[in-house]
Image 1: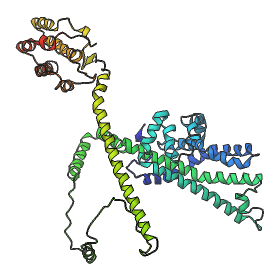
Image 2: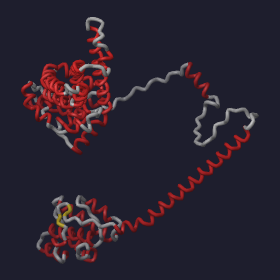
Image 3: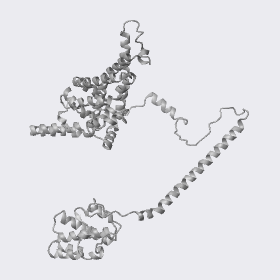
Length: 491
């Protein structure tokens, strides 16, 4: 994607501002957009009306259902125009089969046909080519902060299309000469229309969609561009590219300008807010404080207990006493049930904790030990790669003057012994520090100290490229078989 060629000014916009950008895009590219619309939607619509002539009442439903196909045509024009490419009708007709066979066509006409956020989701299919789980993940990411705005856009445009359709019909009825008995409002929207009346009504519907649908696609596309610019920081990337281009042209002047901007901008990163001088309370505030000092208002109380509402009947009303007794009995019974519920809940929680503690060790014993890694940080840890007697091989390497080879044998042998004899589960991506953490507290203290010294010595030799004294390697060799023994394969 060549962001330098984008014709829209990239900056941080709120979703509502992004929706307002849609009409501006439509005004700027109205000529290619409406040329594409009249070259595709109207011929296809006329063909549909003629094919559905025996069933004119269903033609408008077909036109409405196929709108996502023509939205793709509009989006194709907008996506070309936003990068400054001229979209001619013959270019559109040449690309039309690919546009109509792209990802998401079937889903857009079936499962997601009634999605209220389809204006935001259409570019994911058509422009990004996402399908399946990738498309759904992309939908969730893009919709996280602006799905509600896309829904409001659909609601607004649907209502505007309906209002425009009714307005055109009312205007036509008002302009009909005579008393208008042959073209009444009831005939237009009732069930008594002729085939010609249905045909005229469908043409009015197409005219209303011609006004609203390009605006709908343009606003959804601008919302999509704004969301992608926010996620991928297009504006920052473009600013850096322009800055790099200016620096390559005038490196000295650009460097001075950047230093000047940083010198002015950095002190402003943490602005100190001025402390406002305390103002005396107003008369209204004093009156409110005086009222709140009353014991009735000057306290907050939360009461979560259940109570029966008092009866509104007078106390001396006949039959009132037994009703109060019944209420008290019901209240006592409900409190008893509530207490029993808490008791049973506590017993259930205690039983659950007991079972978890009892069977935790059994479950850990039954767990299958993971396979030991064959390589760690580039070292071959397969037992077959080590000599039968690691200490003897390390002594031989040390006699040859190759202390790094001796340390490598001791280090690899120690790791293999820890995995296969001490049952330490190292992971394939562990580092030296991870290995030290995994053995802490799980091996004897003497072995832990010896392994720490071995790791530090190996770091100095392998990473620091330092010469290790022979005496230090001999100290590591002393008692190595006693601590680590001969590595054997894990059963």
